[in-house]
Length: 107
Length: 118
Image 1: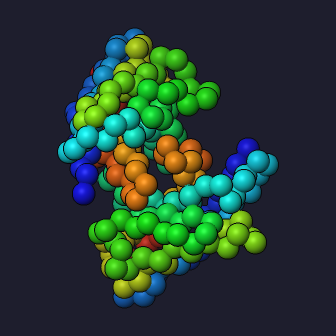
Image 2: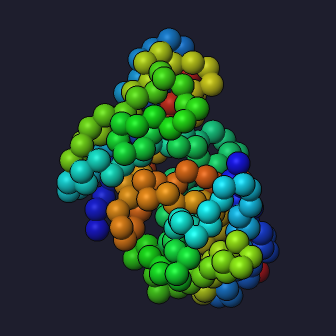
Image 3: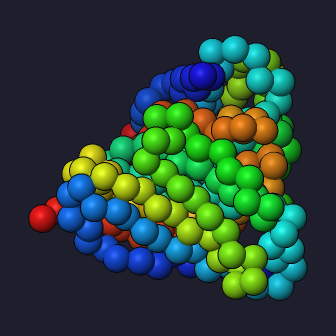
């Protein structure tokens, strides 16, 4: 089974900071990865699909990059509404696997 | 706008079967063109994919749950269902249904809390 390892598991940042979250796959997964944001009490929301494609309606301060085994989600300038938990999700024709999550907290 | 809504009992006794249904509605749903997934999240923990079903009835399951899970679909009602048997307290979680557009999960239900307790 493919394992998805996210880092860090949590981080503290200030409004305006540039934030980068990493997701590593245990083997190559091409660009079959998306990023999700989850706020307390809410369902996750997709931000990025196919590693680098911005979901419709998502602000352009969010961006994704990578392929193969290493992927990053970048928030170029953190806004108050961005404090949340972020998950990567690998998909293939037979299963889906989430990363462990990264909680972005206010410094 | 596609909408998904989970329904089912909020309390299940240990060793019994957890059964949930997801109703899909909204314009441009194209129910038959997607996979439909279940995801769960224990309190304070991460997301776990349970499995998915295509409208042909084809299913894929998380290997860790495969022996206890059945996901089925009723295309006439735009619904799909989850059945998880022999539940324990470890199955207590918020359960989400979601649409799988083959590049991930694009629409989600609001989630339903299911507690396993006697």
